[in-house]
Length: 329
Image 1 (cartoon, helix red, strand yellow):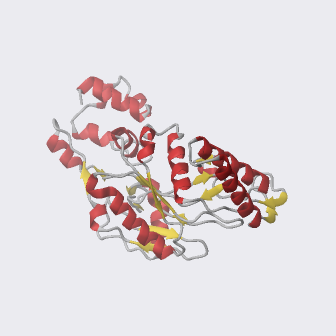
Image 2 (cartoon, helix red, strand yellow):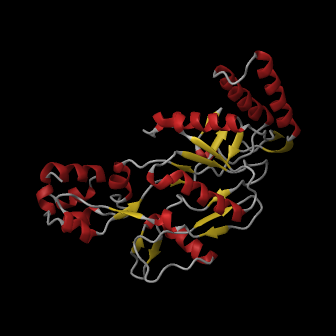
Image 3 (tube, helix red, strand yellow):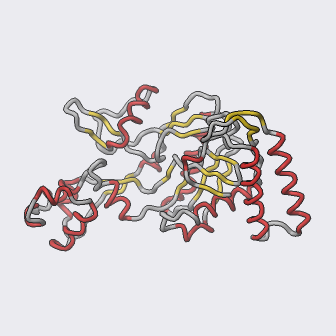
């Protein structure tokens, strides 16, 4: 019915599967009172079935690679789509903010068909949803994927993503997760700032179906970074110069709603502090900031654990726990 498991978004499925997904979704809508009567529900159900069948073609089914009649797509109303994305957020078990699902808004961009318009409309929509810091959780839905098509896509993992530069010495300046994307954007024509830094924000790149990629620099109101500071260790944290972006705006999300696959549906919401401190900045394969924090605060690592090698092998959250226990920081 409603899926957010991205690997499923982007493949051909049989007519029978697509029809069943649509029927299940519409039945949930009926249970939620979307239709005034049983007749209204049956009329909508028949309309959707006709649309799916009209767009059906013969082709290869994803997964088992069988040759069958493939299900076409159907056009969801704005209200149906907004209900679908809210229900998808509610069902996202790993997201602790899903209790706010009814506050989620839909920015309907299904009429956008060019790459240039994609990046322009996304930047505008994200700026509006950021709302000067009073974030309105929003999903930006671009056109769904058609049969045998790739569907629109966004290169970035997030609207606000730091660059990663591979140095001659083999280390990475910036975010190691972004090295490949940074190189791809440079090949596309992006010119990094000089001198390069740890906190350079990448431009936004999107590709509409059948179009070449388009790139846009982020406006100043979205580029503002948050300095990471500590009330007890002010000078030390100033020297560390740790920063992060003001909000998360995930761009690699895909939604599968009623058999309709949305391959480009970015989402803006809120950060949990642990997401930044325990994952983004602390993960050894990201910014790996914990060793620098320990050194900047003058903490002898062997005091944290009898064996420094054992301490270095601990998961980041255990390292943080030990720091808190021993130093109250």
